[in-house]
Length: 352
Image 1 (cartoon, rainbow, N blue to C red):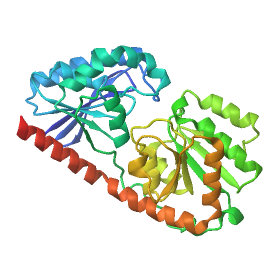
Image 2 (image 1 turned 60 degrees about the vertical axis):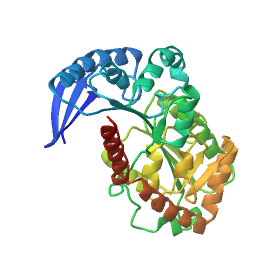
Image 3 (image 1 turned 90 degrees about the vertical axis):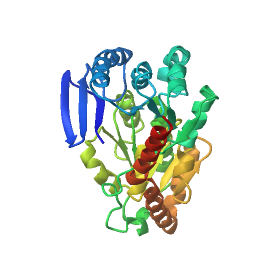
Image 4 (image 1 turned 90 degrees about the horizontal axis):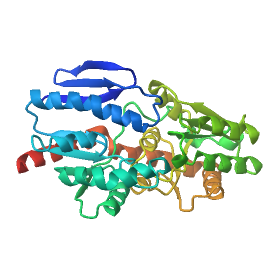
């Protein structure tokens, strides 16, 4: 089996990389201003430049299937070549109309003109969580959608060697809270900061690390400084991927207040690292959180603070949540996810 991967790169130019004997990665360079989100002009640039490469690949190779991650813009290229080769769309989150404020106009314009034709012409649609499937069906009730979850590297992300969950953290060290993600309005990091401020008034000693970059980074740093929380909250910015396993292992509890997710990769990595999860309710949570965390039903700082206080005050609860987090993450190993996609490929080829 031979695989060609067509993707973008943040620097101008085209490059080709041999990932393995049967996998080649084709990188199309763009004028990217930020790694955290796509401007409309960048989407148009990608469609033009990647479209040319895509059409050349289709002409020169006899593909059985094309697999697009994100319904748009990648799915548009597949839609245009559907007469030659069937395609699969993996819906990821922002490519499904929802609460993303920045993309509200794009959803209104592209929904009927692009999203519905792309979805309707696909050989298969795949959502990464039951929650995302429900959102997608609100947009297009007639769609047939499979669910194949995100995965996590269980060898790279693993618990720390010490039994940190059994320590009396309130007496020996601060409770190390961690959140990881793009700093956008959707993630509601400001709500987490307010929860931490509440805890500093009457609660356990804590230290909160925020990892990730984005449009709100400077604003959040200013909020922390104005609240006098510089010693308690660290806005660490974007951290190299190679360092992330150790960042997770230094934490005690992973917290999230995201209003919308397909399925949180950061939450999966935290679980694999043995971190209990405290989160507001959003898509993907029903698959990820059971006996390994606390789901706060009302997205309010006080409710998040109460959940953190409970986990900090009960070492045995924290220990059991930590063990359960790793055990639950083991259901999402990449080998299992890859097997489900492989089964889907085989089914579609047999049907064609």
